[in-house]
Length: 160
Image 1: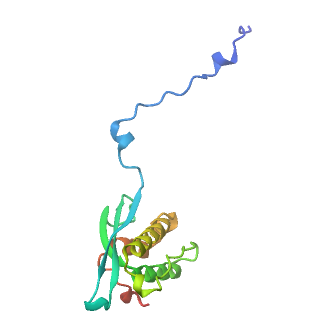
Image 2: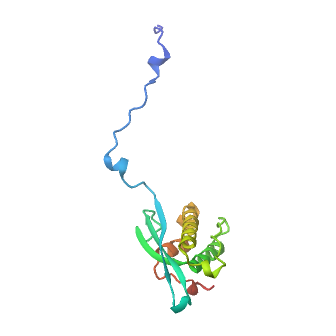
Image 3: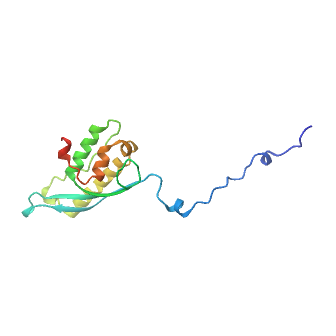
């Protein structure tokens, strides 16, 4: 006994798949894995008459990546800390190319003006966003996590 002819569209369901209605939390909630890094709030410190002046920057981190110890952290770092951090990352891994830091400001007279500090802040943030966004470093670099989240991080204790 033969069956009557049926068009292929009757046999194969060609209608779009039915999607489960998403809840408000699923649409607007935290993504499964996220890492937000911001370098902000530069503060210049120093002695009298411009001796021993330096600027440090606040690093704000929000994440839910399990390798990170804290979901939210704030630490302060100066440029020399970033230099030591970069050097340590290069020693820690050969599988990731670590980008350069923004250059040093050579003219002492302009070193601490607002424009130069802001340009450096932007460069440090770009560097940190690129480095912290690398999946191998996010999950495998203790140096990255310590630099971003440990307020007692000290490059002098790392053997430089």
